Length: 386
Image (cartoon, rainbow, N blue to C red; front, side, top):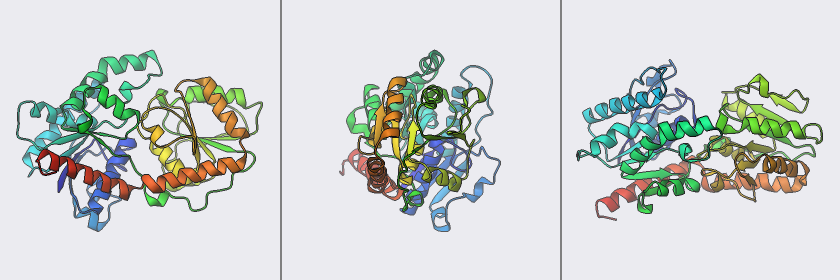
């Protein structure tokens, strides 16, 4: 089977959850001896032809096609225009190639392809993955809501409903896709994954004073402002430690010996070291897909406090953590307080359950195999042979 993978970059040449997912999806499908035509862009200035992170055997199954992403504009909505131009460039390059059995497209990279399918072009089937469909999840502010309505909802709906099938991480994301008008028969549920190297074989015993962690980019939807307000309330009354990884503006930093700001950490080993020294990840986002940070924390052996959005309920439940409503400061406050006071033995059980869930369901070799099987089944049904 030959799959064309359309994406707006792969790790480490582009940073982000979608780009990291594209990297591992490509790498592990190549491990399964699936041929991949990788249509991607270089946002790093590095030599992209090296395909860093792929071994020699994997490279034999990957045909990289580098597409220039348009330079960023300044006008409102410039990203959408640039994304359409990029999708057109991908499509033009794809049409010059030898074709594929299936196209796996990330987000807006499918846009021009969907346009052409509507003109009855004889094209291979395409499946699209918008990951979290964040534009259809709760907005943290009026500005975010207006951006969702004015910019993203319409093209995302168009691309989603125009695709032959749609990839979902499950949970609330499948519900969103269904509400857009996609029948269940066209929704392919496959989780994201994580490498075995993240598995922690020495999960630390929970100490009396627990250590919490927030890790992520500074975006309004990540809930840093809400988390900061709650920590200001708790800091003077309870014994705990809290680590922040990622950029946090000075105005949101709390001056306290209990709270440490590490800044941005790009080295995976450095990130692993901090995670493995913590006990509980806090992820108070307004919208998410299936966050890498939660997957990494679970593989590191952490309990998780997270909002009930996207596919997070597929990862976090009462056995390994706590789910709260997005933007609900009272619930966030209570969840952290409960975890502060929880018997360390109970927290140890949650941490162990996190690690077990990753090993059972979320390792990349299993995820890649499931993805290949579900694409093959979809193609067989389409051709009337399955």
